[in-house]
Structure formats: C-alpha cells, structure tokens
Image 1 (cartoon, rainbow, N blue to C red):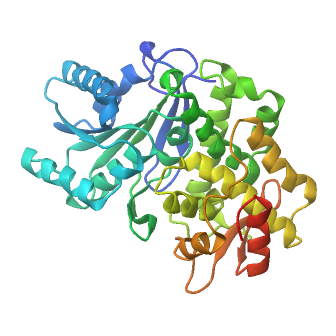
Image 2: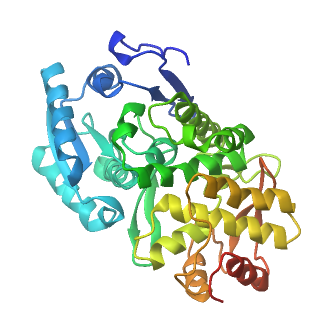
Length: 383
C-alpha cells in the first residue's frame, strides 16, 4: 500500500487513502496506527472547528476518553463533548438522536463545529444522522471500530435510525469529511463481530470484485486474522468497491447501462433487514446479510438467472468464514411483511438485488411468490 497524502510520520507504514469522488469528495484512510492521527486530521480538514461532539457507545467509554484527551491536548482551542449512546441497534432511535441534539444545543454547537464518531455501524449511522440534522448539516468524521463499519456503514454518507416498521427507514444522505480505518482496532474486536463483518466484504466480492472471493476461499483463517496482511487487503478492496459505486450513484437513483448502481450494495439486505427486525436485532447485521445473500442466490437460481455453481458458491464461501447460511427462526410470511416496507420497494412491488453472475448485479422486480417461499425453504426456514 502507498503512503496517504499528508500522512504524518506517526501514521505507520502502508497507509492507503481511497478517494470517494462524489460532489463532496473525501478520503477513507486505511492502515495501522491511525487513531493517533485523528487530532491532526481534524485540524487539517476543519481548521475553524472549536467544538467536537464525540459520539460513542457506552462500552467504548475508556477509548473515547483517551481520544478526547488526545484531541484537546493537540488542539488548544478545541473542546470535546462526549456523547455516550447505547451499544448496537438499540441506539438507533429518534429519542437517542434527540438527546444528542439537546446536548449540542446546550453546548452551543454552531455550523463550524463537528461530530466525531467512534464505534461500529450503529454508532456511525446514528452519529451521522445527528450531524446531518443539526443546523441542517455539520461536518462529521467517522472512526469505525468494527470490520462491518469500516467496509460499509462509515463509507458512503448513508445515515439513519430505525422505527417500529423497519430498519433505517428514517435517515439522510450526509457525506463525512473523512473516514479513518485503523486496522489495529480490529485486533481487540470480539471474534463473532469480526466474522459477522466478513459478510459485507464477501458481498462486495459477489457484486463487483471476484478477487475478494478468491482471497477468502484460498485461506479463510488468514482472512480472519486481524493482525495480518490478508484482512488488510480485503478491507481495502471492499472500501474501493464501495467508493467506486457511491461515486457513481450517491443517492441510489440507478447506475448506467442497466446496472442497479448503489442498490447493488444492498445485495442480500432485503431479507437481512427483515431477519434483524423480526429477531428484535438479536441477529447481527453481518449474520443476517450472509443469510440474505444465500436467499437471493437461491431466488436467482430458481428464477433461471444464476448458474448452480455460482449459487452454491455463496453458501460455501460464507460458511467457510463461519457465517450462517440457514435460518428457521421466523415464518416466511412474517419476513415477507417486513420486506415489503424495505427501502428498495416501489409501491406494491418487491424489488430484490440478484446476480446474473459474479460481478453482474441486477434488480428483480416482483419475483414469483412461490419462488420466494421455495428459496426460503431451501435455507431451512418454515413455509
């Protein structure tokens, strides 16, 4: 990997800057030892900032305190407002966002101030939404601490909270000023969270980069070693996929030449969000994406769109990484009811991202209900 432009000596060797070339371009920094660079990054990107709200989950209070001290020690005129939120999806509510906004108001946050997030995908989604809505938009910098957040939630500018009807139904597009992916943070990530995050990496392989699949299949153990070069390569490849897709279709309006554009990144997510919602978010997002990916591969196979070997490859690569490929904890009718209010739905039409082949995604509108039920039954689910 190459040295990122402007990276200081403390950044560590091999820091890569992936440019997300949207109308408001920004860099995703991927490397080791990057947490120490956050104060310098804030000073470089946001020279007028005087207040920084640090949104973090409660279990990361000690790490957040250390980051807060580093910012205030390095930047004399900056104060940090810690905003501790619940851990995981339970934080993603309008009530939690409102509490954050009230704190910003009490502290006198202005449009020249900023939000800094430290945490996983739920924290990134919530913190980005808080920043998007405060004064109709203030700067946000994401420091993702999980694999899933590094390759998915922190990149692309999607923010949001959940409602009783479903996941991420309330939100806004709000691009960050920067994303800092310090791979050293993955060395303390619980193993189940690391494994779950691999589902989003594998998704990028199926929709855009077959090299990701080949790397994961060649040595699943190395792919899951947070201190090794293989996982670093997978993170970088996945970030590049998302950066490329987002640059061409930020607001999910569709790509060129029949490509679904940003919607391709929702591969497996329609069923996944339904699994999460009906399980009251006890199933991790990445685990649900793995289940959803096998499901849409079965739908595509049974619809005559996808060859057997490619459909079978889904379960093989995901299971090889320790991810679930079966599901039987909900009836298909219950899941389908949630799927029909998915963000990709249009009116009464259910729309699924499927594949014609690896790297060739498309939208399948109103698939045969019998095919959907059969595909879910193939996962071991009750009819």
